[in-house]
Length: 86
Image (cartoon, rainbow, N blue to C red; front, side, top):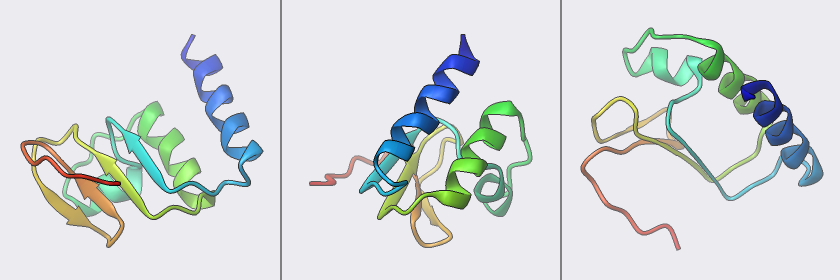
């Protein structure tokens, strides 16, 4: 179930002290989506927002919104663009 997946994600982040190089998700956290002009907040974007408030990362990549641009510095919206992250 989705609740189990969300709990597993939180546990894994906790095991790594909430510090990762990259986050790759379909949707963006609620606040990032709002800045990008999308207001389709739901349980998943709220979950991602809770993570965003705690996590340390270099870049967060997401693609749900079908555009290519940088949001709030470290949040990268990808759609037709291909990038290398290594």
